[in-house]
Amino acid sequence: MATFNDSRSLAEFLLRESLDRLAAAAPKVNYFSLRSVGGAATLLGFDSIAHECESILQTIPDASFTAGVISNFPLPKKAPPALRKIATIDQLYSDHPPLTDESVAKYIRDCGNAQSHLKLASDRKYTDAFAACKSELDTEETAASQAVLGDIDSALDSACSVVQPDFRADNIRFICTIELFRRERWSDAHKLFDAIYPSQIGPDAAAQMALGANHRLPWLGYPFPDW
Image (cartoon, rainbow, N blue to C red):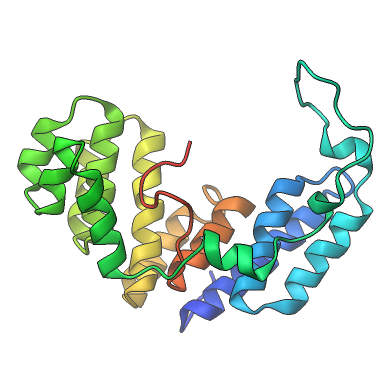
């Protein structure tokens, strides 16, 4: 059971553990995950982890980059050089700008211009927001809004009571963990982290948590699903 006194310690743990798991699978390694971990390490200043990620990328067989890919077009036999490198720091800064209470509240408010449940959630009218939900996704988005607006305990209650199916509730717990670390609620953050790591946190999610806990946007559209 790991204990972290600050978010950088959390990030280093997550990224190192993820790199070790990915390296153990080499050469059959998920290069998307490797680039995600390496990108987070680069942005957060863990240079040795980033360099190790890129070193492994250089050794992956070309065929592994297209393994399992279904396409109507001929696939390249040689991996493009860009896939063997971590994104540039400028690109990483662009993809993962600073995450603040103000920026995420504005994002939810802007989304609320087109979606009534998010408009109500942005005003913290959560009962009305859940009543306005028309789908499982709407319900997940409302609970996610609770989490990033600082009403984390309410979001966790929602994950247990109204968010379905289970994978959507798990998404809310993941976001709540990020927000608890970001807000330095260490005791609550550790309890939730221990409940979901490592069973529900693979390398990609680990990179996202490392970024979010350190006040960087974990993914485009956070806190809403990116798929």
